[in-house]
Length: 212
Ligand code: BG6
Ligand code: MG
Image 1 (cartoon, rainbow, N blue to C red):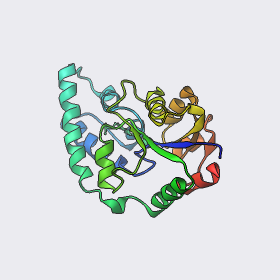
Image 2: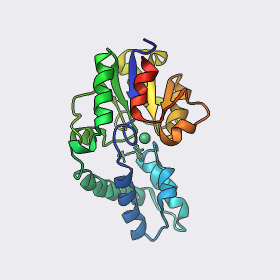
Image 3: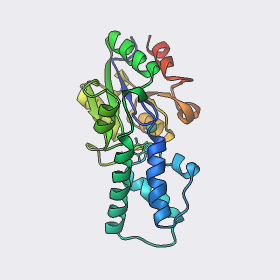
Image 4: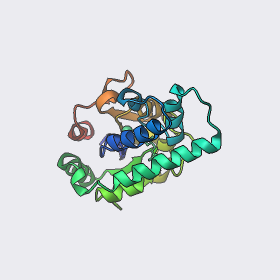
């Protein structure tokens, strides 16, 4: 087999939390009177919470202090976590679950490489608590995608070299991160159109064809 492990992005690959991020940021932006829409929301994919806030505040005429920004990000995250409570194992699609089981049966190690500090909460909501061999997420990194740190740390946890791991991403910033770290990548959605993606995928189950 070409790879020993697969490192999955979480949001937009394993499950779809975009709408909850959007709703929580929208409520916060409305409160401070800053314009925010789904197009701006697309730019937040793969980007850390504080960097996402900076993107939203590009539209603000007011300058906010670091303390005010911390408070806004905290508030957004409280709203977001409340929305995540609506998620159940039914939010894990059969396609994703069956593909993960097949990949595991093939002997591949499976890890998460996500910028989110809510990774473990989300995995537990969708019934994947304890499923992955390693989890590298927003809690163990200092630089978010397009920096490769989250994937480099995942490979270190797996005790593997980047060339032995395939990264699966839905965000352009995620493919940039994979390339910067020396990983092959598979892209879903907008990431499938990235000029440097190794394998453009039409749907999640296509990963099975790539690794076989
Ligand atoms: C990424 C999402 O997975 O996590 C981004 O694509 C999000 O949109 C980032 O900003 C950080 O998430 P969290 O849960 O730590 O606020
Ligand atoms: Mg993503």
